[in-house]
Image (cartoon, rainbow, N blue to C red):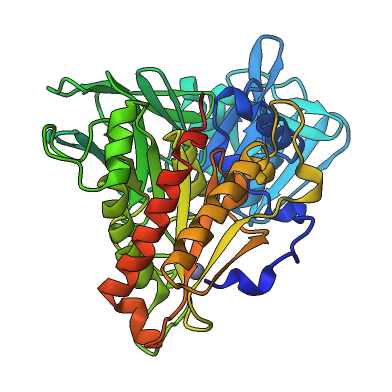
Length: 482
Ligand SMILES: [Zn+2]
């Protein structure tokens, strides 16, 4: 854990840290997020835009309707790709891109590029010294400047410059529950949302290309098919299923694993309950709660160096697997956000928990200093407090923070019973702020045997069972969607 020193200090959160753009979820809670995104630059969902993917930049630009045709600003289109300048005397408009000169005339279809004629499919326009080119000529026009082929998918308004393009592969593991691995040829960062029967991934920034067929069907009763579509600069991949789905990232964001949210008890039916708490759960017959356990750090992001050879990311993964087991035997469905050494952004962690509609989110960290454990709940930014059902991304936690504090107090109590020195703190930590369900982070520190405890299965086990007992004791307070 690295954030112990930041407690209470990030307050309020600078707007530059609000990475809301990528993870706007399409549930009712997130309407305000869409608004925030709009104010902070990205085009709104309804506005027409074009996405440009190139080896040097990926960007979107607004598309303008003029006389029933679509136009885009030529200077803006070329600016991210090279050195560009323009000048205008009202009717004539000159452009220089790197060493290439071009001259255009307002209202005319003929232009000169590198001294040679170029004919547009609709008139060139000049508005307030801005040169506008018709979209349907881009496929011919841009290679004259860029010297590389472009692939313009005009209907979808997606423009690929040079050899960019991320392929999608599908791999269905038909075990129970089934898992669909979506393998991408490069890292991706889609917006993920769920609705009954469907998990939707929208790729705004990734040059994902069609898998060849628009519908891919799977011979499976639960995950039935995937469908691909493109429009308004975005690519969309939907996975249809007969049960609620969740998504998690592995392989440095090159793989998205889509699986059914665990529903069935981990204990085989008929097996006797293994402890009194579990017996109580089964007897009460209430809904089964999904716990999301998040092993902090991972991949290139190693977390704290606990010793010369021991990285925090490895301790958190082992500890999380133990906690998963402890929760499962107490009747919880459990999803680990990573089950291998992969990297995940904080936004991805929060979004995965939110999309899965987990009843509780538990992040695990480890530290070499101090002793015992510390339990954190979110300290929310001042300006992000609750406003009806709308919550800014950084204050998504606000409505359930009181429950998070109850969970935290229960964990402290259970750990004290097991003689862990432990205390509770609030900290302005992501992704605690960003999750919709009760959320805590537990930081495990050494016990009597020093740092060796952090890799000791019995020490971790003692902590994990304390956390699991605590979660059971507040079980009736959990659940994000009543
Ligand atoms: Zn950490």
